[in-house]
Length: 154
Image 1 (cartoon, helix red, strand yellow):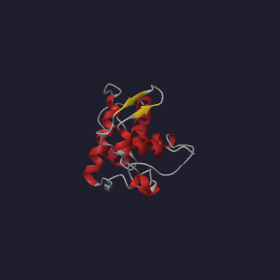
Image 2 (image 1 turned 60 degrees about the horizontal axis):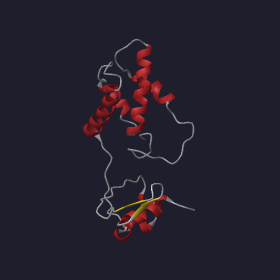
Image 3 (image 1 turned 45 degrees about the vertical axis):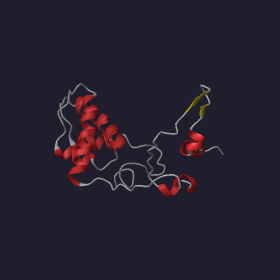
Image 4 (image 1 turned 90 degrees about the vertical axis):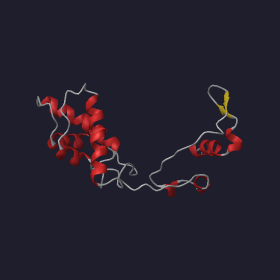
């Protein structure tokens, strides 16, 4: 039962991280001065021996204008991938997108761009986002992960 935690544990212990061996390259690295930043959706699922070696900081989910600002930025990055052929999304579109986590926002925007292009429009509509959100629904739902509590922006 090899867990990724064992590799992380080696990295977090200064004594061990001075001479970490890359198994593939057979090269040693000194990572004793590295700063490790980790994120977890549920810290209670991490083993205690990992939690004991980390400084825990709770970050509240974004709300209000901050959430809309981040959502707009994520949407604009996805639109930029099209050489900016689409107009910046309207506030109603951003508000609808903000229900999801960042990864899902990106996926939904990319799919919604297809709906807008098929309709010969240079802008997204809430209907495009709704259709893309349904199409982008994963077939198998696992443990909730993501930006907001329930993974889908509950």
